[in-house]
Amino acid sequence: MQIFDLETFQATPLNRDPYEHLVIPGFVKAEALERINADYPKIEHAGSFPLDHLEFGPAFKAMIDALEGEEFRKAFEDKFELDLSKRPTTITVRGRSDTHDGKIHHDSASKIITVLLYVNPAWDDSGGRLRVLRSRDSIEDVAAEAPAAGGALVAFLRSDHSWHGHLPFVGERRVIQFNWVTDNDSQRFAIFRHRVSASVKQMLSFGKSSKDPRPIAPERM
Image 1: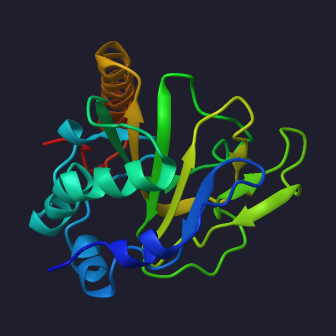
Image 2: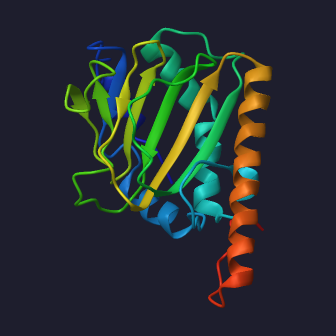
């Protein structure tokens, strides 16, 4: 089963306004998308979680393998005119969004390219749709807005002006973030930070369950 529409990716010109980025609806093919959602990890909290804190099925694992594959990397090397062959990668997964998510920011300097996949089956809310922004001052200063569903891809070259964010949304919001990063130290730090964050959320979940008779599903194991 082919997971990504790399033909459309290759045919889509790189948008350089206001920074180098791509927005491709339906990048995850429909048949793969349905299976990925069936195998998506159960995430009860907002925030980004590393793969080793999650359980998921074979279709989701196949997508992760494709992200780490040579064909995917070469497509991005050609598009962004970069050599990524020796660059480490990081992957985190989101399942929910909360009120604090979506604030305008640019990614940390350790990231080279950010790839976001929105695998929600459908999306009717005006919030939660990633916006490529022209400045850090206004969420309405929009150069492009991405679909938050249907296997849409957003990819951009990180810079000090690669501003992005979204209007608030609270609820289920399935996003996979894949990054090429500058070096192994950056990779290790990013993984460590997300592991600590995930462990804290898990402990808080267990703490709440001891006071509340309603069960809370753990995020790990």
